[in-house]
Length: 259
Image (cartoon, rainbow, N blue to C red; front, side, top):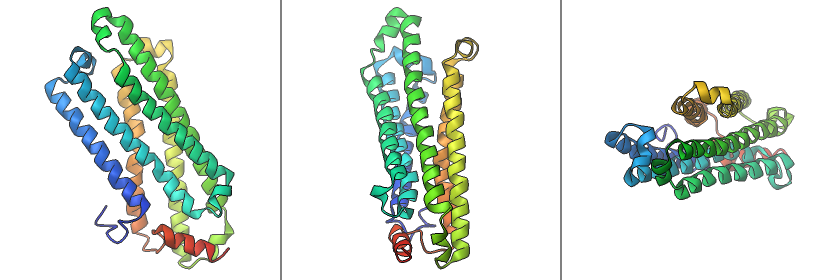
């Protein structure tokens, strides 16, 4: 990806992708080390070392997600005229902050959770841990879904449906760019909806009795990862349009020249 965008490495979008990749890769590496020691998620509570490895990996994962979540805003803001006066964009930033608070909160929860009590009291504290964990995931998935929906409608009103952009040079490229952006945001919103439904389902008594927690967590992680993979696909597709406005400053210049 860096090779593809070697002339645009200084742009916000590329920086976000690089930082997100590095943070997630560090988290994955730490978790792989933990798996080599003991490949059993339920037994991370038996050792301070295993718990700390899992917690450290989790911190890097969520920091990577927080950086990656900003990608949508970085791809939206350049197309908004008077961004600080645009209520939809302001709501997007507010929802993004709430999403970040949710992810930071789950890290703090793990830092202070008395995991040793699971060894002493068995299933009681084990169930309390997972109940609290899914409550955090419910809040995170809700704000993620709202964030994606607001971003979609912001882009729809201020970019997809604007006649302003039809006059910009490279008209065919811009049409392809808008089409890709529309598909990308719809895809991300749909995945967020599936994630939210899965998390809500995990709170149901029937689900708790018939599906193991690790099974639900596996699919939640899979759904959560998909939008971040889409970021890299998005940048590769952009590079194939052979158009100028990958650079945010050029995008602004093109837009405001027609204002």
